[in-house]
Amino acid sequence: SYVLTQPPSVSVAPGQTARITCDGNNFRSTSVHWYQHKPGQAPVLIIYYDTERPSGIPDRFSGSSSGDTATLSITRVEAGDEADYYCQVWDRDSAHQVFGGGTKLSVL
Amino acid sequence: EVQLVESGGDLVQPGGSLRLSCAASGFMFNFYWMTWVRQAPGKGLEWVANVKPDASDTYYVDAVKGRFTISRDDAKTSLFLEMTGLRAEDTAIYYCAGFDLTSATHDAFDIWGQGTLVTVSS
View 1 (cartoon, rainbow over the protein chains, first blue to last red):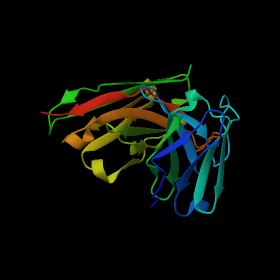
View 2: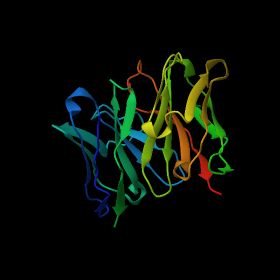
View 3: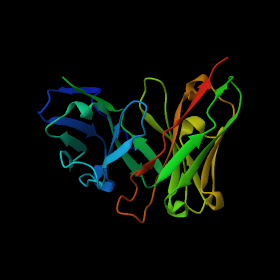
View 4: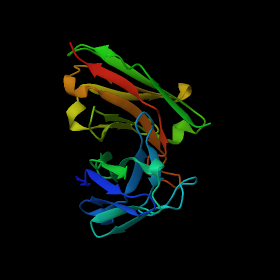
């Protein structure tokens, strides 16, 4: 089964680039998805299949994956980007979903 | 408009039961794997259960296996979660979500509801 590890928090100044990592195991057999979750709202899919962006998501959000680490990058960070961010994979063998512990992004 | 609307959350005593519902609209519900995800107070997202598009199979996180039952009614485009033997640690906001393996986003959750709060306390 998968275990996904994220840093609990990341802080960045407005206009800078935030990078949130997701360490896992055996990412070669699955794809990593990323969600933005603001208090009182539904989570929103922002990156799927490691690097793909759904329609309507700004190109300031991007994803990458190398070895057993996936990374969400947010360029030109804005105050409105403050949220919790989660990585997630699907274990096809067990049909179980796994979420990382989440990273709270703070904009200084 | 694509929409998932959860209902049924409530305050319930330990050992009690509760049934959550999720009404879907605006998309091909019968194509979607449907899921319950929860978030306990101050904690992260936790996957709870999946049901396949044809309802032929269901899957559960170990913590709820044998106590929770996920089901769906495609004719009514609705998802359910029957919860029994509730414990304090089941206290959480419960979200319904879905993914379509035939879509571009494949196994990513591209549809989410706003959630319903379940509180287990005496």
